[in-house]
Image 1: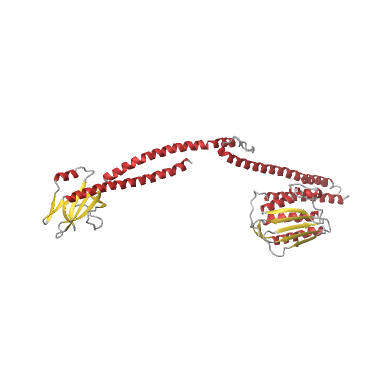
Image 2: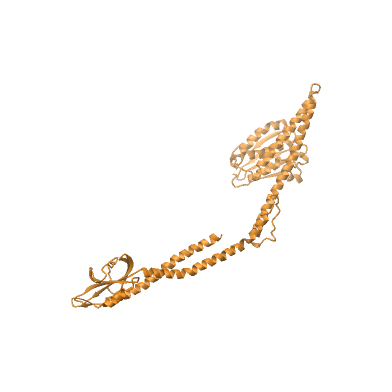
Length: 457
Protein backbone atom coordinates (compact mmCIF):
# COMPACT_ATOMS: atom_id res chain seq x y z
CA UNK A 1 0.00 0.00 0.00
CA UNK A 2 2.85 2.35 0.84
CA UNK A 3 4.50 1.69 -2.52
CA UNK A 4 1.25 2.29 -4.41
CA UNK A 5 0.71 5.53 -2.53
CA UNK A 6 4.26 6.84 -2.99
CA UNK A 7 4.81 5.69 -6.57
CA UNK A 8 2.35 8.25 -8.05
CA UNK A 9 4.00 10.96 -5.96
CA UNK A 10 7.41 9.98 -7.32
CA UNK A 11 6.07 10.08 -10.86
CA UNK A 12 4.58 13.50 -10.21
CA UNK A 13 7.91 14.66 -8.75
CA UNK A 14 9.76 13.56 -11.88
CA UNK A 15 7.16 15.25 -14.05
CA UNK A 16 7.50 18.40 -11.96
CA UNK A 17 11.29 18.23 -12.36
CA UNK A 18 11.00 17.99 -16.14
CA UNK A 19 8.50 20.86 -16.22
CA UNK A 20 10.65 22.96 -13.88
CA UNK A 21 13.75 22.39 -16.00
CA UNK A 22 11.84 23.36 -19.13
CA UNK A 23 10.51 26.52 -17.47
CA UNK A 24 13.92 27.43 -16.06
CA UNK A 25 15.52 26.88 -19.46
CA UNK A 26 12.88 28.99 -21.11
CA UNK A 27 13.32 31.92 -18.77
CA UNK A 28 17.13 31.73 -18.92
CA UNK A 29 16.79 31.82 -22.69
CA UNK A 30 14.67 34.94 -22.34
CA UNK A 31 17.33 36.56 -20.14
CA UNK A 32 20.17 35.59 -22.49
CA UNK A 33 18.17 36.69 -25.55
CA UNK A 34 17.63 40.10 -24.02
CA UNK A 35 21.35 40.37 -23.28
CA UNK A 36 22.25 39.29 -26.83
CA UNK A 37 19.71 41.71 -28.30
CA UNK A 38 21.27 44.62 -26.41
CA UNK A 39 24.77 43.52 -27.44
CA UNK A 40 23.80 43.22 -31.10
CA UNK A 41 22.23 46.68 -31.12
CA UNK A 42 25.25 48.16 -29.32
CA UNK A 43 27.58 46.55 -31.87
CA UNK A 44 25.41 47.78 -34.76
CA UNK A 45 25.70 51.33 -33.48
CA UNK A 46 29.50 51.08 -33.74
CA UNK A 47 29.32 50.50 -37.51
CA UNK A 48 28.54 53.62 -39.54
CA UNK A 49 28.61 54.35 -43.24
CA UNK A 50 31.57 56.44 -44.36
CA UNK A 51 31.74 57.48 -47.97
CA UNK A 52 31.69 54.34 -50.09
CA UNK A 53 32.56 52.11 -47.08
CA UNK A 54 31.88 51.55 -43.39
CA UNK A 55 33.54 53.10 -40.37
CA UNK A 56 33.85 50.71 -37.37
CA UNK A 57 34.29 52.41 -34.01
CA UNK A 58 35.15 49.31 -31.95
CA UNK A 59 38.21 49.84 -29.75
CA UNK A 60 40.43 46.86 -28.94
CA UNK A 61 39.85 47.35 -25.22
CA UNK A 62 36.14 46.80 -25.71
CA UNK A 63 36.80 43.60 -27.65
CA UNK A 64 39.08 42.27 -24.91
CA UNK A 65 36.36 42.93 -22.31
CA UNK A 66 33.80 40.95 -24.33
CA UNK A 67 36.19 38.02 -24.81
CA UNK A 68 37.69 37.99 -21.31
CA UNK A 69 35.50 35.28 -19.65
CA UNK A 70 36.02 31.92 -21.46
CA UNK A 71 32.89 30.41 -19.87
CA UNK A 72 30.70 33.35 -20.84
CA UNK A 73 32.50 34.53 -23.94
CA UNK A 74 30.67 36.73 -26.41
CA UNK A 75 31.21 35.98 -30.11
CA UNK A 76 30.33 38.48 -32.81
CA UNK A 77 30.49 38.99 -36.52
CA UNK A 78 29.56 41.82 -38.84
CA UNK A 79 29.00 41.12 -42.54
CA UNK A 80 27.25 42.51 -45.56
CA UNK A 81 25.09 39.89 -47.24
CA UNK A 82 25.42 37.94 -49.40
CA UNK A 83 28.44 36.92 -47.28
CA UNK A 84 31.10 39.66 -47.26
CA UNK A 85 32.93 39.39 -43.94
CA UNK A 86 33.74 42.67 -42.18
CA UNK A 87 34.50 42.11 -38.49
CA UNK A 88 34.56 39.39 -35.75
CA UNK A 89 34.62 35.59 -35.97
CA UNK A 90 33.86 34.30 -39.44
CA UNK A 91 32.92 30.86 -38.03
CA UNK A 92 29.62 32.25 -36.81
CA UNK A 93 26.76 29.83 -37.76
CA UNK A 94 24.43 31.41 -40.34
CA UNK A 95 20.72 31.85 -39.64
CA UNK A 96 18.67 28.69 -40.38
CA UNK A 97 16.66 30.68 -42.94
CA UNK A 98 17.16 34.00 -44.76
CA UNK A 99 16.22 37.02 -42.67
CA UNK A 100 13.44 39.05 -44.23
CA UNK A 101 13.25 41.82 -41.65
CA UNK A 102 15.65 44.75 -41.62
CA UNK A 103 13.87 46.94 -39.06
CA UNK A 104 16.31 46.28 -36.22
CA UNK A 105 14.38 43.36 -34.69
CA UNK A 106 16.79 40.54 -33.71
CA UNK A 107 16.24 36.93 -34.67
CA UNK A 108 17.34 34.22 -32.18
CA UNK A 109 18.46 30.66 -32.93
CA UNK A 110 20.74 27.90 -31.61
CA UNK A 111 23.88 26.70 -33.36
CA UNK A 112 27.43 25.40 -32.92
CA UNK A 113 30.63 27.43 -32.91
CA UNK A 114 34.09 25.93 -32.38
CA UNK A 115 32.51 22.64 -31.29
CA UNK A 116 30.26 24.09 -28.60
CA UNK A 117 26.58 25.01 -28.49
CA UNK A 118 25.83 28.71 -28.71
CA UNK A 119 22.81 30.98 -28.65
CA UNK A 120 22.87 33.50 -31.51
CA UNK A 121 21.10 36.82 -32.04
CA UNK A 122 21.08 38.00 -35.69
CA UNK A 123 20.24 41.62 -36.49
CA UNK A 124 19.81 42.77 -40.12
CA UNK A 125 19.90 46.53 -40.82
CA UNK A 126 19.66 48.85 -43.83
CA UNK A 127 22.34 51.54 -43.68
CA UNK A 128 23.53 54.34 -45.92
CA UNK A 129 21.79 57.07 -47.90
CA UNK A 130 18.71 56.43 -49.99
CA UNK A 131 20.89 56.62 -53.09
CA UNK A 132 23.49 54.18 -51.74
CA UNK A 133 21.66 51.73 -49.48
CA UNK A 134 23.34 48.54 -48.25
CA UNK A 135 22.43 45.68 -45.88
CA UNK A 136 24.44 44.91 -42.78
CA UNK A 137 24.12 41.66 -40.72
CA UNK A 138 25.22 41.79 -37.10
CA UNK A 139 25.47 38.44 -35.25
CA UNK A 140 26.22 38.08 -31.56
CA UNK A 141 26.53 34.63 -29.91
CA UNK A 142 27.06 33.37 -26.40
CA UNK A 143 27.84 29.86 -25.13
CA UNK A 144 24.91 27.92 -23.65
CA UNK A 145 27.07 26.66 -20.78
CA UNK A 146 26.01 29.50 -18.54
CA UNK A 147 22.39 29.06 -19.58
CA UNK A 148 22.42 25.34 -18.75
CA UNK A 149 24.17 25.97 -15.45
CA UNK A 150 21.63 28.61 -14.50
CA UNK A 151 18.74 26.33 -15.41
CA UNK A 152 20.21 23.55 -13.27
CA UNK A 153 20.63 25.90 -10.36
CA UNK A 154 17.02 26.99 -10.65
CA UNK A 155 15.94 23.34 -10.89
CA UNK A 156 17.93 22.47 -7.78
CA UNK A 157 16.40 25.34 -5.85
CA UNK A 158 12.91 24.27 -6.90
CA UNK A 159 13.31 20.51 -6.40
CA UNK A 160 15.00 20.55 -3.03
CA UNK A 161 11.88 21.57 -1.08
CA UNK A 162 9.78 19.20 -3.24
CA UNK A 163 12.07 16.26 -2.42
CA UNK A 164 11.98 17.13 1.26
CA UNK A 165 8.20 17.38 1.06
CA UNK A 166 8.03 13.93 -0.59
CA UNK A 167 10.23 12.45 2.12
CA UNK A 168 8.12 13.97 4.87
CA UNK A 169 4.94 12.77 3.14
CA UNK A 170 6.36 9.25 2.87
CA UNK A 171 7.10 9.14 6.58
CA UNK A 172 3.67 10.52 7.47
CA UNK A 173 1.89 8.12 5.09
CA UNK A 174 3.84 5.15 6.44
CA UNK A 175 2.95 6.06 10.00
CA UNK A 176 -0.68 6.57 9.01
CA UNK A 177 -0.87 3.21 7.22
CA UNK A 178 0.65 1.44 10.20
CA UNK A 179 -1.84 3.07 12.54
CA UNK A 180 -4.75 2.45 10.20
CA UNK A 181 -3.93 -1.24 9.71
CA UNK A 182 -3.22 -1.88 13.38
CA UNK A 183 -6.84 -3.02 14.04
CA UNK A 184 -6.35 -5.83 11.55
CA UNK A 185 -3.62 -7.29 13.74
CA UNK A 186 -6.11 -7.93 16.53
CA UNK A 187 -8.50 -9.59 14.11
CA UNK A 188 -5.64 -11.66 12.74
CA UNK A 189 -4.70 -12.82 16.24
CA UNK A 190 -8.29 -13.91 16.91
CA UNK A 191 -8.37 -15.98 13.73
CA UNK A 192 -4.86 -17.47 14.02
CA UNK A 193 -5.33 -18.64 17.61
CA UNK A 194 -8.54 -20.52 16.80
CA UNK A 195 -8.95 -24.27 16.52
CA UNK A 196 -10.14 -25.52 13.10
CA UNK A 197 -13.26 -26.82 14.87
CA UNK A 198 -14.02 -23.49 16.55
CA UNK A 199 -16.72 -21.84 14.45
CA UNK A 200 -17.99 -19.44 17.10
CA UNK A 201 -18.48 -15.83 15.92
CA UNK A 202 -15.66 -13.32 16.19
CA UNK A 203 -16.11 -10.64 18.83
CA UNK A 204 -17.55 -7.67 16.97
CA UNK A 205 -18.35 -5.47 19.97
CA UNK A 206 -14.69 -5.01 20.90
CA UNK A 207 -13.51 -4.89 17.29
CA UNK A 208 -12.35 -1.50 15.93
CA UNK A 209 -14.80 0.44 13.85
CA UNK A 210 -12.68 0.04 10.72
CA UNK A 211 -12.92 -3.77 10.75
CA UNK A 212 -16.42 -4.33 12.12
CA UNK A 213 -17.87 -4.83 8.66
CA UNK A 214 -15.14 -7.37 7.88
CA UNK A 215 -15.73 -9.14 11.19
CA UNK A 216 -19.47 -9.20 10.55
CA UNK A 217 -18.88 -10.74 7.11
CA UNK A 218 -16.61 -13.36 8.64
CA UNK A 219 -19.22 -14.13 11.28
CA UNK A 220 -21.83 -14.62 8.55
CA UNK A 221 -19.48 -17.00 6.75
CA UNK A 222 -18.68 -18.87 9.97
CA UNK A 223 -22.41 -19.20 10.69
CA UNK A 224 -23.07 -20.67 7.24
CA UNK A 225 -20.14 -23.05 7.58
CA UNK A 226 -21.38 -24.08 11.03
CA UNK A 227 -24.85 -24.81 9.65
CA UNK A 228 -23.34 -26.75 6.77
CA UNK A 229 -21.17 -28.82 9.12
CA UNK A 230 -24.13 -29.48 11.41
CA UNK A 231 -26.24 -30.49 8.41
CA UNK A 232 -23.54 -32.89 7.23
CA UNK A 233 -23.24 -34.36 10.75
CA UNK A 234 -26.99 -34.88 10.93
CA UNK A 235 -26.96 -36.41 7.48
CA UNK A 236 -24.17 -38.83 8.42
CA UNK A 237 -25.90 -39.76 11.67
CA UNK A 238 -29.27 -40.29 9.97
CA UNK A 239 -27.67 -42.21 7.12
CA UNK A 240 -25.82 -44.45 9.56
CA UNK A 241 -29.05 -45.05 11.47
CA UNK A 242 -31.02 -45.81 8.32
CA UNK A 243 -28.32 -48.10 6.93
CA UNK A 244 -28.05 -49.98 10.21
CA UNK A 245 -31.66 -51.20 9.97
CA UNK A 246 -31.51 -52.96 6.55
CA UNK A 247 -28.03 -54.26 7.22
CA UNK A 248 -29.08 -55.70 10.59
CA UNK A 249 -32.15 -57.25 8.97
CA UNK A 250 -30.00 -58.63 6.18
CA UNK A 251 -27.66 -60.22 8.72
CA UNK A 252 -30.46 -61.71 10.80
CA UNK A 253 -32.30 -63.06 7.77
CA UNK A 254 -29.06 -64.61 6.51
CA UNK A 255 -28.45 -66.32 9.86
CA UNK A 256 -31.99 -67.69 9.90
CA UNK A 257 -31.70 -68.89 6.33
CA UNK A 258 -28.46 -70.69 7.12
CA UNK A 259 -30.05 -72.24 10.20
CA UNK A 260 -32.99 -73.53 8.21
CA UNK A 261 -30.99 -75.03 5.36
CA UNK A 262 -31.12 -78.40 7.08
CA UNK A 263 -34.90 -78.12 7.24
CA UNK A 264 -35.23 -77.12 3.59
CA UNK A 265 -36.32 -80.59 2.49
CA UNK A 266 -39.02 -80.70 5.16
CA UNK A 267 -40.25 -77.10 4.68
CA UNK A 268 -38.95 -75.45 1.46
CA UNK A 269 -41.67 -72.77 1.66
CA UNK A 270 -40.21 -71.44 4.92
CA UNK A 271 -36.75 -71.16 3.34
CA UNK A 272 -38.21 -69.47 0.28
CA UNK A 273 -39.98 -66.96 2.50
CA UNK A 274 -36.80 -66.29 4.44
CA UNK A 275 -34.81 -65.74 1.25
CA UNK A 276 -37.53 -63.41 -0.04
CA UNK A 277 -37.15 -61.32 3.09
CA UNK A 278 -33.39 -61.42 2.60
CA UNK A 279 -33.83 -60.11 -0.95
CA UNK A 280 -36.18 -57.38 0.27
CA UNK A 281 -33.63 -56.24 2.86
CA UNK A 282 -30.90 -56.15 0.22
CA UNK A 283 -33.16 -54.18 -2.14
CA UNK A 284 -33.92 -51.67 0.58
CA UNK A 285 -30.22 -51.26 1.36
CA UNK A 286 -29.39 -50.80 -2.32
CA UNK A 287 -32.19 -48.26 -2.74
CA UNK A 288 -31.04 -46.35 0.33
CA UNK A 289 -27.44 -46.22 -0.89
CA UNK A 290 -28.57 -45.07 -4.35
CA UNK A 291 -30.70 -42.34 -2.81
CA UNK A 292 -27.85 -41.20 -0.57
CA UNK A 293 -25.61 -40.94 -3.62
CA UNK A 294 -28.31 -39.02 -5.50
CA UNK A 295 -28.71 -36.67 -2.53
CA UNK A 296 -24.95 -36.08 -2.44
CA UNK A 297 -25.00 -35.22 -6.15
CA UNK A 298 -27.87 -32.81 -5.56
CA UNK A 299 -26.01 -30.88 -2.85
CA UNK A 300 -25.44 -27.18 -3.76
CA UNK A 301 -21.65 -27.52 -3.72
CA UNK A 302 -21.60 -30.53 -6.08
CA UNK A 303 -20.54 -29.80 -9.70
CA UNK A 304 -23.42 -29.56 -12.18
CA UNK A 305 -23.01 -29.76 -15.96
CA UNK A 306 -26.10 -28.37 -17.69
CA UNK A 307 -27.24 -28.91 -21.26
CA UNK A 308 -30.47 -28.42 -23.24
CA UNK A 309 -32.81 -31.42 -23.01
CA UNK A 310 -36.34 -32.34 -24.04
CA UNK A 311 -38.51 -32.62 -20.93
CA UNK A 312 -41.31 -34.33 -22.90
CA UNK A 313 -38.98 -37.12 -24.09
CA UNK A 314 -37.64 -37.59 -20.56
CA UNK A 315 -41.17 -38.00 -19.12
CA UNK A 316 -42.16 -40.41 -21.89
CA UNK A 317 -39.10 -42.57 -21.13
CA UNK A 318 -39.86 -42.56 -17.40
CA UNK A 319 -43.50 -43.45 -18.10
CA UNK A 320 -42.48 -46.46 -20.20
CA UNK A 321 -40.07 -47.61 -17.49
CA UNK A 322 -42.78 -47.31 -14.81
CA UNK A 323 -45.46 -49.26 -16.72
CA UNK A 324 -44.43 -52.71 -15.37
CA UNK A 325 -44.56 -51.46 -11.77
CA UNK A 326 -47.95 -49.83 -12.36
CA UNK A 327 -49.37 -53.01 -13.95
CA UNK A 328 -48.04 -55.08 -11.08
CA UNK A 329 -50.07 -52.90 -8.70
CA UNK A 330 -53.08 -52.81 -11.07
CA UNK A 331 -52.83 -49.03 -11.64
CA UNK A 332 -53.63 -46.86 -14.63
CA UNK A 333 -50.56 -44.82 -15.60
CA UNK A 334 -50.81 -41.97 -18.13
CA UNK A 335 -48.45 -39.29 -19.42
CA UNK A 336 -50.30 -36.23 -20.81
CA UNK A 337 -48.95 -33.21 -22.69
CA UNK A 338 -45.69 -34.88 -23.72
CA UNK A 339 -46.46 -35.05 -27.44
CA UNK A 340 -44.48 -31.91 -28.38
CA UNK A 341 -40.94 -31.10 -27.25
CA UNK A 342 -40.52 -28.86 -24.21
CA UNK A 343 -36.90 -27.72 -23.89
CA UNK A 344 -35.22 -26.93 -20.60
CA UNK A 345 -31.59 -26.50 -19.54
CA UNK A 346 -30.35 -28.87 -16.85
CA UNK A 347 -28.61 -32.09 -15.85
CA UNK A 348 -30.51 -34.99 -17.40
CA UNK A 349 -29.40 -37.53 -14.78
CA UNK A 350 -30.55 -35.40 -11.85
CA UNK A 351 -33.85 -34.44 -13.51
CA UNK A 352 -34.47 -38.12 -14.26
CA UNK A 353 -33.91 -38.84 -10.56
CA UNK A 354 -36.30 -36.04 -9.56
CA UNK A 355 -39.27 -37.19 -11.66
CA UNK A 356 -38.54 -40.89 -11.08
CA UNK A 357 -38.84 -40.30 -7.32
CA UNK A 358 -42.18 -38.52 -7.74
CA UNK A 359 -43.57 -41.23 -10.03
CA UNK A 360 -42.27 -44.05 -7.79
CA UNK A 361 -43.87 -42.44 -4.74
CA UNK A 362 -47.20 -42.08 -6.56
CA UNK A 363 -47.15 -45.75 -7.64
CA UNK A 364 -46.02 -46.98 -4.22
CA UNK A 365 -48.74 -45.20 -2.22
CA UNK A 366 -51.70 -45.59 -4.62
CA UNK A 367 -53.86 -48.64 -3.90
CA UNK A 368 -54.87 -51.10 -6.59
CA UNK A 369 -57.47 -49.86 -9.06
CA UNK A 370 -56.26 -46.26 -8.73
CA UNK A 371 -54.54 -44.07 -11.29
CA UNK A 372 -51.37 -42.03 -11.65
CA UNK A 373 -51.27 -39.16 -14.17
CA UNK A 374 -48.11 -37.32 -15.23
CA UNK A 375 -49.01 -34.01 -16.92
CA UNK A 376 -46.59 -31.64 -18.69
CA UNK A 377 -47.39 -28.00 -19.45
CA UNK A 378 -45.05 -26.00 -21.70
CA UNK A 379 -44.53 -22.25 -21.90
CA UNK A 380 -41.80 -19.94 -20.57
CA UNK A 381 -41.96 -21.73 -17.20
CA UNK A 382 -42.61 -25.44 -17.84
CA UNK A 383 -44.61 -27.30 -15.18
CA UNK A 384 -44.80 -31.04 -14.44
CA UNK A 385 -47.57 -32.50 -12.27
CA UNK A 386 -47.74 -36.03 -10.87
CA UNK A 387 -51.30 -36.80 -9.63
CA UNK A 388 -52.34 -39.94 -7.82
CA UNK A 389 -55.50 -41.25 -6.13
CA UNK A 390 -53.78 -42.60 -3.03
CA UNK A 391 -54.38 -41.66 0.60
CA UNK A 392 -52.47 -38.38 0.24
CA UNK A 393 -50.61 -36.56 2.99
CA UNK A 394 -52.20 -34.62 5.87
CA UNK A 395 -52.00 -30.86 5.46
CA UNK A 396 -49.80 -30.47 8.53
CA UNK A 397 -47.20 -32.83 7.02
CA UNK A 398 -46.98 -31.37 3.50
CA UNK A 399 -43.79 -29.50 4.38
CA UNK A 400 -42.30 -31.93 6.87
CA UNK A 401 -42.10 -34.70 4.28
CA UNK A 402 -39.32 -32.69 2.61
CA UNK A 403 -37.13 -33.24 5.67
CA UNK A 404 -34.51 -35.94 5.30
CA UNK A 405 -35.53 -39.37 6.64
CA UNK A 406 -38.93 -38.07 7.77
CA UNK A 407 -41.75 -40.53 7.15
CA UNK A 408 -45.33 -39.63 7.94
CA UNK A 409 -48.05 -41.89 9.21
CA UNK A 410 -49.11 -42.86 5.69
CA UNK A 411 -45.58 -43.90 4.78
CA UNK A 412 -44.75 -45.80 7.95
CA UNK A 413 -45.36 -49.21 6.41
CA UNK A 414 -43.95 -48.43 2.96
CA UNK A 415 -40.56 -49.52 1.70
CA UNK A 416 -39.20 -45.97 1.40
CA UNK A 417 -36.68 -44.40 3.74
CA UNK A 418 -37.72 -40.74 3.63
CA UNK A 419 -35.21 -39.45 1.06
CA UNK A 420 -37.21 -39.30 -2.18
CA UNK A 421 -38.87 -35.92 -1.66
CA UNK A 422 -35.77 -34.23 -0.10
CA UNK A 423 -33.79 -35.37 -3.14
CA UNK A 424 -36.47 -33.98 -5.45
CA UNK A 425 -36.43 -30.59 -3.73
CA UNK A 426 -32.60 -30.33 -3.75
CA UNK A 427 -32.50 -31.18 -7.47
CA UNK A 428 -35.26 -28.67 -8.19
CA UNK A 429 -33.41 -25.91 -6.34
CA UNK A 430 -30.28 -26.54 -8.39
CA UNK A 431 -32.38 -26.16 -11.56
CA UNK A 432 -34.15 -22.95 -10.45
CA UNK A 433 -37.38 -24.85 -9.93
CA UNK A 434 -39.85 -25.37 -7.09
CA UNK A 435 -41.54 -28.53 -5.77
CA UNK A 436 -44.95 -28.17 -4.15
CA UNK A 437 -47.37 -30.72 -2.71
CA UNK A 438 -51.12 -30.30 -2.41
CA UNK A 439 -54.05 -32.59 -1.79
CA UNK A 440 -55.83 -33.99 -4.83
CA UNK A 441 -59.60 -33.84 -4.73
CA UNK A 442 -61.45 -35.91 -3.73
CA UNK A 443 -58.42 -37.87 -2.46
CA UNK A 444 -54.82 -38.33 -3.40
CA UNK A 445 -51.78 -36.08 -3.83
CA UNK A 446 -50.46 -33.67 -6.46
CA UNK A 447 -46.68 -33.10 -6.74
CA UNK A 448 -45.95 -30.04 -8.88
CA UNK A 449 -42.54 -29.03 -10.26
CA UNK A 450 -42.37 -25.55 -11.81
CA UNK A 451 -39.24 -24.25 -13.57
CA UNK A 452 -38.90 -20.56 -12.69
CA UNK A 453 -35.48 -19.71 -14.15
CA UNK A 454 -35.27 -17.38 -17.17
CA UNK A 455 -32.90 -19.78 -18.98
CA UNK A 456 -35.21 -22.82 -18.67
CA UNK A 457 -37.46 -22.34 -21.68
